Image 1 (tube, protein in one colour):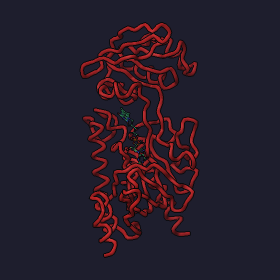
Image 2 (cartoon, helix red, strand yellow):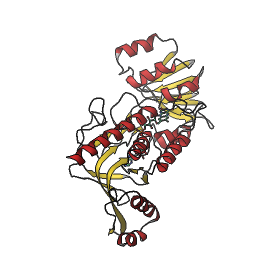
Image 3 (cartoon, helix red, strand yellow):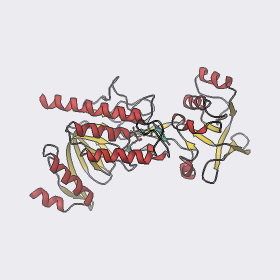
Image 4 (cartoon, protein in one colour):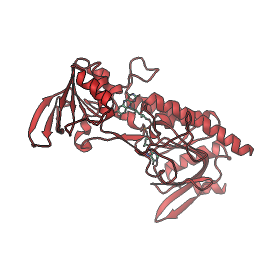
Length: 353
Ligand SMILES: Cc1cc2nc3c(=O)[nH]c(=O)nc-3n(C[C@H](O)[C@H](O)[C@H](O)COP(=O)(O)OP(=O)(O)OC[C@H]3O[C@@H](n4cnc5c(N)ncnc54)[C@H](O)[C@@H]3O)c2cc1C
């Protein structure tokens, strides 16, 4: 009764979550209180399992955890649905024979999670303490979460060139994923930007579809492995624009051309292309965890082999946030399922101890 009075005072979305917690399990919902700090209403949540991120990895982990009776709480981040929402058509996620838009696919996953009873909170974690037990998470909205186990599925963000200027072309000719979108460029002319292994691999992959692939690189030589360079040089479909960067992307709705700028001479020229693939790297969303978790040189979380277990017991990483050669939605979903199953095992072992 006392708790209900406190809850009644809270913001609508928090009220919804609180009702859910109480309805479902008093084990999961140990206490819920509003406290005032810096004039902001805050809530404290205590959970058995919290999942960070609302991409394919996060939603799948949440669905599995809910099915295991763990009453998971998923904190969505502010980019609800994750990277896939940027893609107009997903043709390689099984179960959708005619393809599906990224936004619709992610909305279906969200609905499925809600139907399973997952509590979804629209908030973003900005600080963690992974040495305390339970783990403590603080959020942008001023909430505090305590949890016995944690699944990190905060994904990665592709690096874009001049994101603000170019964002209207995402899904309309501008992509960061040849495996995802290459198929749409049969017999077309595409540009790939970058000079490392990813750019070389993307360019070679695109030669399976495109009539011509123009590799645009700001230097006079590639950084990619020699064997990949050799394959590029030998492929008649590949052309190079050395010492060039994209100054501008042109096109009414869809990409129709780029303006190249030579970094040595400042000379500009127009190049007609149907698509532009950026392969200039990914940045994992791991800044707040780096103090605690072992990451590779690029900041991706390292997990134990064939596992989602990080170097801290009870903390798991799934999807694009962990170091993997396969940054695809179906792989992220698979590793979300693994993380939930491993977390379930961890929780039942720690409860038995
Ligand atoms: C343009 C584009 C097209 C693509 N097309 C395809 C395709 O056709 N097929 C395919 O298989 N793959 C495709 N991909 C790749 C695919 O989107 C990713 O592999 C997949 O989304 C990874 O899922 P994830 O759950 O690991 O992370 P993400 O989808 O990146 O989701 C991460 C989530 O974490 C949240 N988050 C971040 N930080 C925090 C925080 N501090 N606290 C709480 N939450 C946080 C974000 O809000 C987001 O919801 C595409 C990617 C892009 C960019």
